[in-house]
Amino acid sequence: MSQLKMKLQDDLKDAMKNKDNFKRDAIRFLMSALKQIEVDERKELSDSDILKIIQKSLKQRDDAATAFKEAGRIDLYDKEVAEAAILKSYLPQQLSDEALKAIIQKHIELSGATSLKEIGKIMGSVLAECEGVADGKRINTIAKELLS
Image 1 (cartoon, one colour):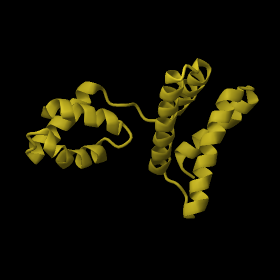
Image 2 (cartoon, one colour):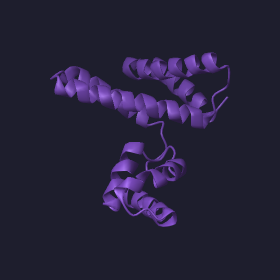
Image 3 (cartoon, one colour):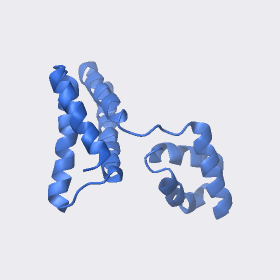
């Protein structure tokens, strides 16, 4: 069993012991998503697989929070933001903007990209290098800024 999955199970037990229903439910939701993929694909998930699922779930939370805020449902917005904070605690430390700019600049120089039309040349390699430590949306935004 992967380290991350064991940590999730331990945190679930702690949340249950401490009667922290909100954290318990958030972790259970994530664990059910992991179990569903394990059953569907008939494989044991690695830590990197679990990180991808957490990132996907985090993106869903962010999208839902944005929609709830625009609709004026602050109660639901607060719930989504709190769940996102719990999920973020399981992700590795995210790169700072300066470190991310340096990585993207390195890939721009290696690929020879000079305009926004060539952003596709660098996105794949940057995403591969920054997997788990930077969001694709952030990478894209900074790459556009550097190429314009």
